[in-house]
Length: 113
Image (cartoon, rainbow, N blue to C red):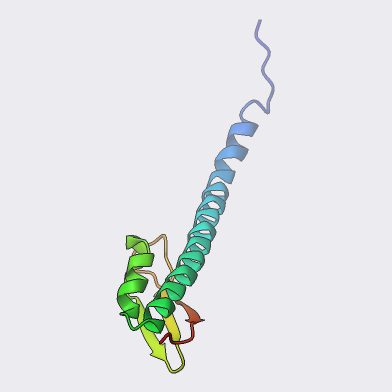
């Protein structure tokens, strides 16, 4: 004789109902990690661009050399007087075609003689 509870499928139903929430939470964690990586990489690229400009080099080329390939899309580098550089980088997204704005980072090194 087999005994089965009237709630035997309840856990499966609850888990299935939670799957979309788990997927959204996982995607949000991945996106936060991508944004953190982009902020760190943009800061490093801005510093490299400012160093290049301070010694008379090409700040855009230095920024591109310091950035990972997947972050080079729509990069803007502009110079400021006194050795400053402003780097504008599009934020990475998980859904192609979606735009969440841009990240602006500046760095400055005094010009070298």
